[in-house]
Length: 389
Image 1 (tube, rainbow, N blue to C red):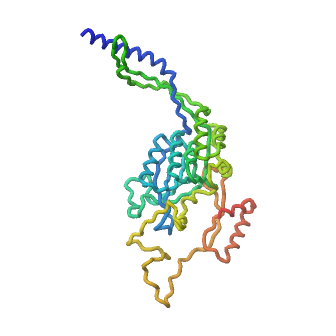
Image 2 (cartoon, rainbow, N blue to C red):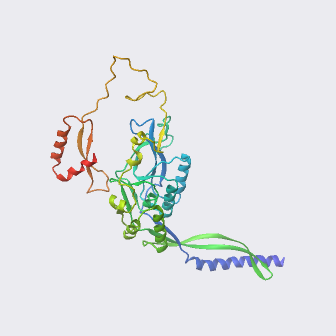
Image 3 (cartoon, one colour):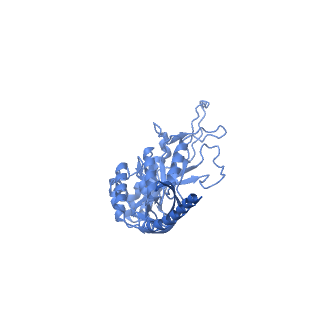
């Protein structure tokens, strides 16, 4: 009885000593959490498979993975789940993100490279059901959950996002999307831990039976805005692994965390951050599925028998047209019209891009219409933008 009471007392005293001793030590403990972030980055990144809704592309249309939102610690697991559901199909990723967690961005980049996926900076304009809509049945029976079109105008890949972007095999941004970097913000969190240790005295010596944490308290935190050497070496090794130039890292280090340095297309090409000056259309255009061989992103969905074939489509088992009968006239297309358009992205004001929209059929009067528009513009600087037709 006395022996048992003494053992219990020894345990209680030990816990008390551990509590006091570890409190002093733990107050100096630091946890480094590198992340590149700005206040209120918005919703967490979500991944959805989208099928092109471009008119006339069915039954064989391109598909892609839309990745939009903030990169967080759990984001790589979401991408893994999406890739597993695809069963090995290699779809390009269309990303629009303000940034987020650096470690997660590195994991995403390696996951993208491991699966040999292409990536583009762009947004997805959904048709029918939206990713945040519950119980939507508008796309039922159409062969895909989500439909839409990808575009680059106003899309962003900032902060930690370029690290994720670096993992792509083919990497494109284009002229109307934005990719920006800045210094990494490192958060140090002080944590006070209390341990409980159970031991037994064996021949006058303590034999530890178990040790566990019984409480964990936040003892404050602080942030630094200068990249430490271990993290710099880690990022340099990652960029080298992805075949991206270290100019990206140097630009990150020289740009304050409170701002964003937008990289221009030519500089990104020189740094090998992009593999060409193409835009998101390179990976998502409906004409991709007209080529031979077909890209892996194209998937054929048979047209249901109760849906009428679009005008002009050839039906393999159709009856031949009897001789002497004229084929129906093609649907009329309006004459080409020219309109000067200015970008609406709020980030570009007051210096926004402009272009000439040219849509319709070319007729004998079309050149004169173009001359009239160019004369009305007046400023010769607008003329070089004809390359945007």
